[in-house]
Length: 347
Image (cartoon, rainbow, N blue to C red; front, side, top):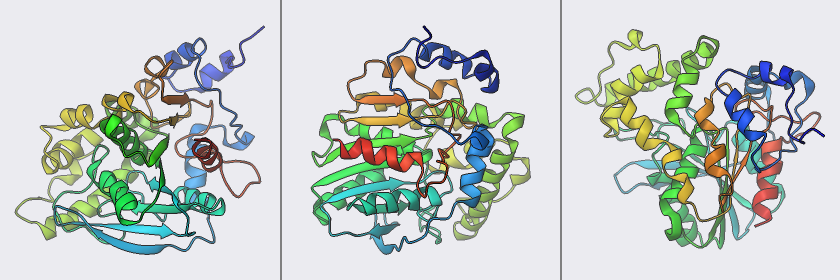
């Protein structure tokens, strides 16, 4: 009898190179089985990624915005959905995303329908207004998330707090939970992270391939616009020059991310900011869901060996789903929203 997570040769051929070894390992590892079934027309990783991002509309979410000052003289814009609940989900968006992205609004709406409050926060410079400091945000910048958790507990009085993050926001979530370890506030019951570049170097290498040029160029174009504005805001610290020579993420990270955030260079940033360096110290139940056909993730982003029999981290690797996709046929909500609520509500 074939194992229940058996893959055919056709499945292996359909998956991108670099994840084949991860699939092979997964056949023999007692990890979380996934119930996700992709619509037949969204089984391609690129389609599963692009179509929900481009065409999904989430109606009926009305945020209440609050501006929170940070200890370093900057600010965070917070978008709330209130239900007068003592339970809160904090939602962290992906690179160059915001609280207005459909995957964030969908998560906020689903938890709100279950009676929870939701906080969809915007990373610095992502709320529609450029932040005040020269620095931006990055995958390893967990100090803002830490402030939000403390604010939710001490400032707002929530007795139950759960974390959900997507892509970069998932990286922040996993890194934060690992960094806090046994010092995590008791009100934080657990976390869920989707489509996470557990290894930034592995993800950058995946995004450097010819087949992923569309995503790479799109991200860099957005980042270029912010650098251009920042250079006008801080001309002595940030130079907008030579951007035409930036073709790949290491080019950008060497020139801007590393110096602005006190890393030696891009490689130092990838090493010290990656969630995989910290996440295994987490002490609360945490679900990581990375689709095997995610075009953004290299093989090191599927930590089968590290998660095998881990007390607190549950790794789920559906065959399909793309990057922050996971659509369901004829359903207002997607698998991410239903799975996150099911996991966190069970705690």
